[in-house]
Length: 185
Image (cartoon, rainbow, N blue to C red; front, side, top):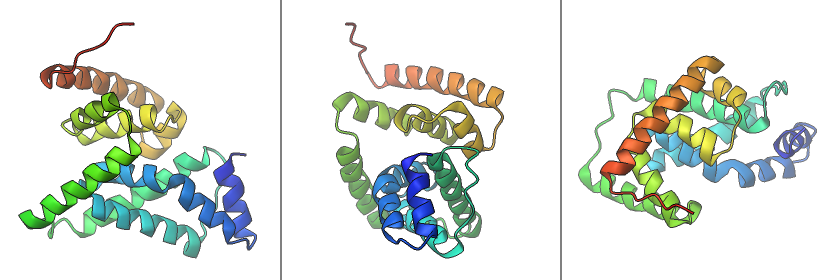
């Protein structure tokens, strides 16, 4: 059982420190993952809070069929999809708010992605379709296994492998367009 599952079990048993550990361990990654759905860092932060709130109030059952992280991200994905579904009509935002969101997002990304090459790759990934961004993020930045990614994205393993292949090819082309130079060791 991984650390997140242990923390969640402790929380369910009445130890509130368990949920504090979960939030500390998964908050930043979940924010950036959900930002791939809503393209607004402030909304992604709110959706992350809603995800943790759902854990605390509804206390869903963790079966252990996947890692705790993939289970949590699947809950977050569902929260994001619900948000998008309910707010599709009110998707327009002012330019001033959008500029503020971009500066907040850049600050969070710099703190989370410290190396310069990763930042360049991340910026190029933003130009890719949402499915490509999400699968690349889950596999390479979050280090999830194909089974976990399949669970989160609601795709079978063949679809995940094909999507990852197409996403890598697309990212390679985008990096070339952005002038990224591969260093050989």
